[in-house]
Each structure stands twice: as C-alpha cells, then as structure tokens.
Length: 222
Image (cartoon, rainbow, N blue to C red):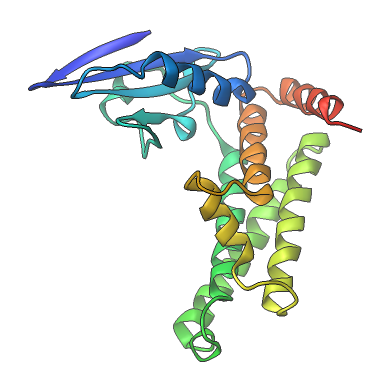
C-alpha cells in the first residue's frame, strides 16, 4: 500500500508489494511501472518487496523517470518491519564481488597488474572469495546450497580462464555490468540475479526455497 510523504512540491511515495515468492518480483515490477507510467511531475516512488510482511531491502527500487536500484530504504526503514536477516545472500554477494574484482584486474596492462597495491587487492579478493565460499559450504547442505556453490565455481573457473588468457579479459565483470545497465542482458548476469533471488528466499524460508528451486528446474525446457 502507498504511504505519501511530502517535501515541498515533491511527493515521495512508498509502495509495499507482498509477494508469495521473490521470483515474482520482476513481473510485479513491470506491472507497477505500467500502472505508474502517468505519475505527476515531482512524484517518486520507493517500491519495496515484502515476504511474510517483512521488507527485502536489497531488491527495493526507486521510480523517478525509470526504475533504479535503491541504495537503502532511507527514512522508510522506520515505517516498515525489520528486514529479514540475509546471511547466505551476503556471503554470495561477497564471494561474487571478489570474483568481479579479479575479473576486472585482468583488463589492466601487465605492468599495472604487478603493482604492489594491485597485488594486495588480488590477494585480498582471493581470500574473501575462499572465505565466503567456505562459509556457504559449511551451511546445512541442501540442493539450493549446492546450486549456489555451483554458480560460484563456474564463475570462478571463468575468471581463472581470463587470468590464464584463455578467455577475453574482464569477461565476467563486463557481462555483469552490461546486464545491470539493462542495455545488454547476459547469461552470467541472469545467473547471478537468479542466484541472489534464491539465496534471499533461502534466508527467509529454507524449506520453501528448496521446493522453489525444484519447481524452477521442472519448468526448464528439456
């Protein structure tokens, strides 16, 4: 439901969208964009998905002229219930951020890659990836955890190929950036977004998330 908050001539509206599953978020957002296409000048919306009545801040978006990821819930956080803890999602994002850094380093000239500051950044990223992946692997095992580890390992193998110059430099991070900017959706970006959605669902309800993964697998074409 919308909650208006006035500031001068501008109207900032908060819209809560209760979802049965976060997989529905993209479709719900498209419907909201269409419904709010004729919004008045100065009228903005913070759209927050809810699961079981609690917000999922990492998926919130702000509608101005188009939708953009919201950095946080801002003042609206005081008007909503506390968000769900997101241990698995945070670990997944930490591990993948490390892979993106390593992928980005491969685009640097070789002389810069050997600089001590870059070397330290590489060592830190490798350590962060291994730590986060190991923490995920140490969680109670199920098919969804296995799937997320598989995504990380596939993307890590791709980065290793970039480092070994067996694949285009910066391929993984460039694919993620292109997908995030909505101008060139890529398989790697869609796989990452799907993994994040499933991780969020697991953080909210483990058993239901595992069933959701099985359902999604059944929907894939043979």
